[in-house]
Image 1 (cartoon, rainbow, N blue to C red):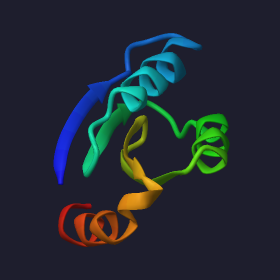
Image 2: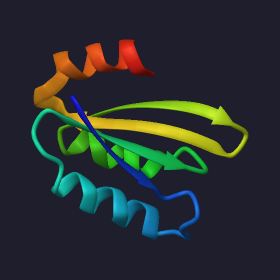
Image 3: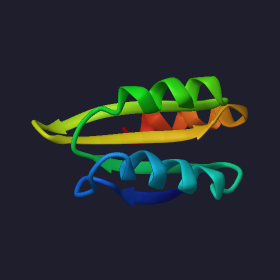
Image 4: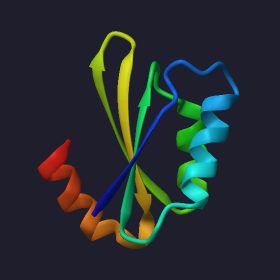
Length: 86
């Protein structure tokens, strides 16, 4: 899977959500959006699930998270990707 990275850690709300959703709208098939964030965006997770996206979140440090997002239709590839990369 190709990886597209966005860093929203320095952005103030609601910009992180806007950047992430815009990036997802342009995400190619069989690609993963890798998001660097300063917190876990629980409202985003609700939107992702409701709109057919899969995600995996990992805390790197106290105020540092990485979130991997992929289309639900790429579920098998995404599962393999998470096993190898997360």
